[in-house]
Image (cartoon, rainbow, N blue to C red; front, top):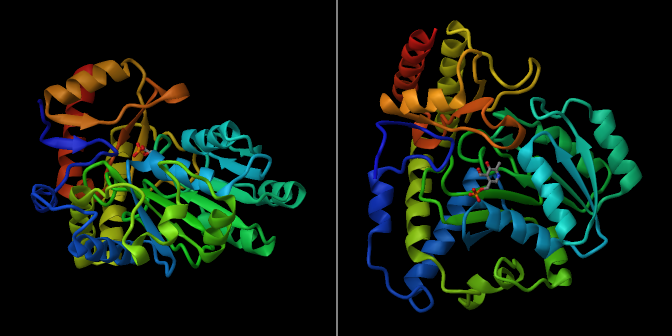
Amino acid sequence: MRTYPIPMVPGPVSVPDEVLQAYQVNYGSSDMEPEFLDLYNRTEANLQKVYATKNRVVIQTGEGMMALWGALKSCLLPDDRVLCISTGMFGSGIADMALTIGTDVRKVDFQFNQTINDWKKVEEAIVEFKPRMVTAVHCETPSGTLNPIAELGQLKDKHNVPLLYVDAVSSAGGTPVLTDEWHIDLALGGAQKCISAPAGTSFLTVSPRAWEIIDKVDYAGYDALKPFITAQHDFYFPYTPYWHGIAALNTALERVLDEGLEAVHERHEAAAIYCRQRLETLGLMLYPEPGAVNSPTITAVNVPEKTTWEELDEKFRQRGLVVGGNYGSMAGKVFRIGHMGTQANIQLVTQALDVIEEVLKEIR
Ligand code: PLP
């Protein structure tokens, strides 16, 4: 397998040795050994710190989409009303997912290069549609943007919306996610972004209100949340838990907490600021429009004229740099520098920008 000395893909990010070592242990049966339950409980407590919540946290086997699907299916019945705020591919994708499970979906659309910027539009939709759930994405990874979830949480609270569902897959562990303060009922995440563990575990915080709804909805399926009401108490999980994955996740979380959440967030902010200053001096244009909030975890850049994404990708790789491409309407037009988790590192970002500078000189 070819590896790259300057990995800047916005997840999966490069995993530290200590985390890999935690994975490479011949663990016993996670169904039988109390040590596993202890690990699960400690991992939950560490996630509660990262998500600033007193709510319980469910840890599932499967990467981020597992949590995204499981939370929708476990909390919604056909015909329930779901208001999906879309400022990008994931926000829009969540609306499509909610449709496939038969719910009544209304979307509040913003352009993919914007963040939520019209609260009147959002509030009117909440008042008129009276949704059971509002969904939003904190960091839209393809767009490199960060939505103002605190304000959305205030509207949710003001209008007594039962559930606020927030995809924090690309933000938690890189920038504050204040689950309780922002009135989030379901805050979703995956291991392979800012936490810097291998892909394969996902997690979500669940508010007391959400647990009540989960119990009533009674959804059964591999991704169901209901079995987690009693899983820890009874030490009876719905499938053989992923000891290796949770051990790696917990080690990664401990690294984040040992550094200190505030310091980690500052490290992300500093990497992002440096990255954008250098891009500006190179004459490259950020994808988010002026006024939109750029995420501290990722920078989305327009592919400059006179070249193509394919050419850039090839020339970057020749020099040891790998960055993210894009999808859908942004495919070939926008590339992404993932300064998240282990990659939120000024030295690494400097090396990445040095390569980008060299390639641009060659092309121009
Ligand atoms: N949500 C966001 C914002 C993401 O960026 C991603 C993955 O890139 C996901 C959800 C899905 O996560 P996964 O690819 O781990 O299933």
